[in-house]
Image (cartoon, rainbow, N blue to C red; front, side, top):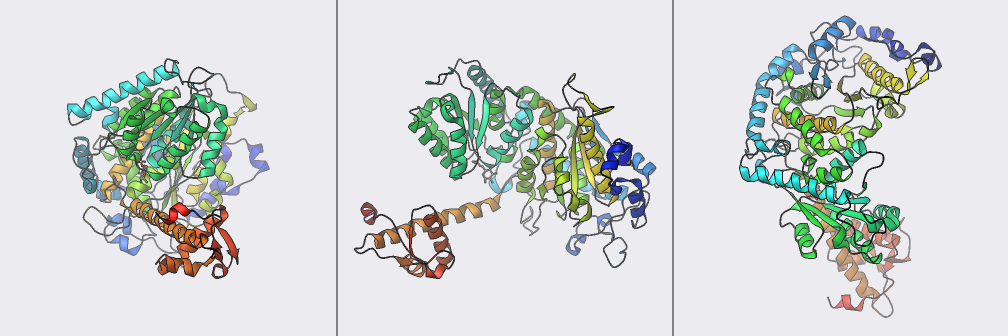
Length: 619
Ligand SMILES: O=P(O)(O)OC[C@H]1O[C@H](O)[C@H](O)[C@@H](O)[C@@H]1O
């Protein structure tokens, strides 16, 4: 294994000697590994798992000193080099590499997984042909058609995709070129985008903006992706007078997500207060006839673009959801689509070794025992890719985190994703990754090109700033591996629309294939509803609390109520804790007044409303 001392000039190591980076440590661990050569055993698997995973996964390494043994990872530098070259995947046209050599799967495991992969490839083929691959919602899953409309199962869908793309290009040209102008902007053209949306209607556009927007984009983007009033105020305040030249894009597939609706209402209020006509600056991206679509149509918004039933929120970056904002920021969206399409093509190869998405799925399965027993830490070593891990968090966790499999068995599947960027995270939590609880595997995202050509310089003889970043990545990869921590490395030449499109497509497909391997529906999200429903119930309870407090506050004299009394009068004694929390929140926002006691001892509190709302008494 390469020592970091080969990668970073000696005198730099001197200032911060990190012995764990050297070959010596690697050697030391060699003795405690249970396997050598390509014979690899696997430990740490929960017993329940061992039943239904390939037998090569459930072999347990010999325990040393009473501790569970490490996985027997290859440590011989020559054998590792061989493993590296043997398994290195390259996509020539995309300039993308996938190195899985630091994941310790054995040939035996790959062989055992073969039938599952064949099944997954078949499922993917059918999905692309228009099968109802989201059975719980009775929907097709068509995000692959977005970058290759010819694949769409019928000409109606193909035309829908092509026409939408054309409309996006035409509209963004007119906006950027100043043909469509904001009605009362002193700048005479749109200069800002305020994108309102959440989840899949925000994460893709946020990631792509951070990754690809030029330093001086034709329109600069901001996001409202929550129902946090202070966060919304902040975005609007930052726009200030530029609100007049802001294009507001409201994105919601369903058209009824409360956070997005609230964001819209808040922005519309800001427009009213600034004396601006929102409709002339508003754009909706949503399914036809959704609440949002109908509102936009009735109010005569500037434009509406469709979202399709067969595209899931978390795979919608290459629909209008991601493409419109990208085009308006001057990002070449056709290149993004081309990158994704090339990657999709590669991912159709029915040979695991030559199929990058399948290789990823294979690694995930091996590393996490096929049950998500290890987390995936995603570390792009490039600032512009900072939001990739956040984007992947939804893509992976909402797709794979399922209670039941497709046959209705309780499986509680999933794969936890987190990470920010390297080398920054080396100064935050890599300590634990290397030495602490062994509950993860890493994915490094490497970008070969440090800077645009002609801009580089040596900050010391023979060494650029980018060499340090490179050294940090390689060093961390080696140091983690030396301590039995596995990793994948995805390498791209540059961060371009093409490579970003390819990365998105790579992970979309890996998630789809992995879902097949573990037999879950990757395309629904039943668990999300529980939280939404509960939030709705809290708001309904708040209305009852308000009515009770209002009645008591309209008495003469005003009758401050204890929390118990409020709960009683709401006929909801079982909800007393929630009622207390509602009251404490209202008090903190000057909407209820604490007459007695304090919130630290809830039983002491007596509360009333500052004003009596007589009308509400008769509602
Ligand atoms: O686009 P929308 O319909 O507003 O949905 C936004 C988000 O809402 C839900 O919470 C789903 O779990 C996400 O998958 C979705 O992306």
